[in-house]
Image (cartoon, rainbow, N blue to C red; front, side, top):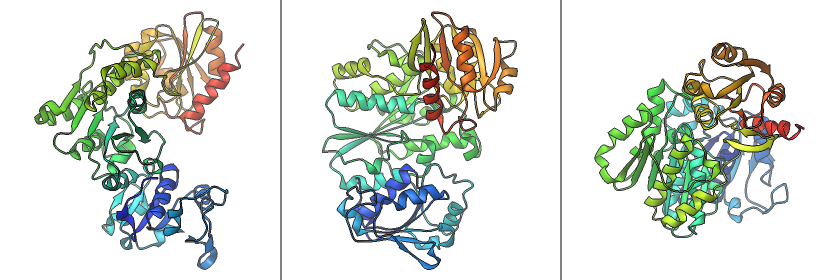
Amino acid sequence: MIVSPLWRGKRYAVLGLARSGAATVRAFLAGGASVVAWDAKNEARDRLASMFPGEGRGPGGQVRIFEGGGSEAADGSQLDPGLRRGTLEVANLEMDDLAEFDALVVSPGVPLNTDHVASLARAESTPIIGDIELFAQARASLPPHKVVGVTGTNGKSTTVSLIHHILQTAGMPSRLGGNIGLPILEQEPLPAGGVYVLELSSYQIDLTQTLDCDVAVLLNITPDHLDRYDGFEAYAAAKARLFAMQSKGHAAIIGIGDAASAQIARSLSARGEDLTKIAPGVCMVQPLSPSLAGPHNLQNALAAINVCEALGVPHAAIDAGLLSFTGLPHRMERIATKHGVAFVNDSKATNPESTAPALAAFDRIHWIVGGQAKSDDLDSCAPSFGHIVRAYTIGTSGAIFADILGGKVPVEESGTLAAAVAAAAANARAGDTVLLSPACASFDQFRDFEDRGDQFRTLVEALP
């Protein structure tokens, strides 16, 4: 667990108790801080409460207080002895005077633009930060290390995983964390010379003020999450802040295939040799794993190569890492080949811009598309419509997408993923690809994109 001596004796409010929020609470307690935590979901509060011994009730039975005593959690697991140094209260933060806290620590999923508690904190001039900022505060107490931060609308998880894999191949100690689902505060500190590789969403960057990345990467910027920002320019500006936090001499790597990213690169042009631009269509000679198929993964690989070169990784280790990388689930993941037909799970493609590279990567595609739409068009996908043998629409956007695709490609409204898989498997012939790349969020029919991808796998495995 990563903690900072700066937190000792301070009082923090924590809003949002999913993975990163719960990890933040544990790190604060290990660091000797006093914490008041809250989540609107009962199950999240109960899950946090189950982690700690010493439960007590406050007035009215509405408040749980955890303090010193015992080294065993309710589930029988051993707690870090340091966890006994802090105190935790689970209480509705709307009832507290937020001016009394040193900071409000918000999980990235909490919408800063609409959340009432965040609004109260701003009114009291209470700093609003996230777990990445807490990691930045803790860096001074860690053994000497470097930090790589990767942001962008699409490709972040693949790129950070590839960087981490190459570093491991080279024998360099590294930790993976951030938006990829691994709270960085929960990771064990690295020995001297280690590298922390962070996937950073715009939400996390919004909550960070002092993260000075030794290498900062921007892959691309396309319209997404606009419900959280005052327009696309504000969303792009959030990404650009990653570079504004860097010290002079630290490396910046930017893909310039879109106008917004290219503009950020131009704004950093005075950094000279510390700035590397990745232009679309650049060729490379390094051998690539089959899991890095498609033009978008070529850019991801180029970004990873540049990062590792900046970190001094030998070229032989870079090549070995590129060749042995196995890819990530739900990202152009080939899950089966049946009767000569390939089935590819690209459930992580939750907007048209992230689906477009998958459509460009295969020749004869039976495309399963639809869900909870983030936009009312498929314009980004249009250049690859010629690769589509037939489209099968699902979810709440099914009818809309069927209308958009009608007259351009053969299309049928399947409604459900099960019906789409059955129809695609029946129509496909040897050499074709059945591609789940929905260009939509999953929440209309599934728990999340992972659940959608897992159900796709189950359906495919059940095919004769």
